[in-house]
Length: 332
Image (tube, rainbow, N blue to C red):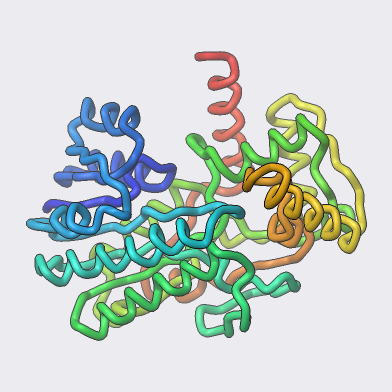
């Protein structure tokens, strides 16, 4: 079976592509990172360097593919609206057009639970729960629009399953935990209300398991969306204390009230938009909201309908990440 993975040089896409190869599939990846692409080629994966803005290249890449995993996205707390729209909306439109044109048997789309976030505490969120009237940032907004593109393709007959994995971490992560580690090294990490926010994380291999479940999931899963997490909500403070202990680094929390942290982030954003010419600030209002507000997800639908079962727990996952991070730092 031939399988295409978009975003195949990114964290999730690369991990998925290597697992698919190990399982015996013929794997093609699309991605921007030429260095990672060459590494994948050395292991037997076909690589095409492509940007999500390359509409015809994206559409043509779907030819002769049985399954397409759409993992590619511009995922960041900061950036230009146009860039998010081009990557997440127009890029997804190209993928759905390619799948329809070339009779792909199934599209498995990676969305984001950021679309639920409204800067308030929300616990045990279900897939059918409401979205905020105003998306929290450009990323969340364009991921909602991307889901609409997928829904339109589904209505045209494309078999598709969508997952919404929360906060991926593990070896190879260049985003969530590394951002926190860098912030801790520079100034410290804002701990609003002593870090009592309940959060959900997803270990990278568990997310890949969820994607693999979608390949042969039953017909009643088509057109549906599924929350994916480790299924074990944990206090932010507990996660960070454990992380830095495993890294053998001092944890530098900055205890601060939410209104003050939010005001500082607003100021930093203002400076970034003016003096710093658009450079991403150290903290955004969205980042402060994520650190301050509890957000957990109901994954019972994924368990019951996809057969998803998170195998690697958060503590074990942090151990694996810490070992990988220390090896990177030490040049092993």
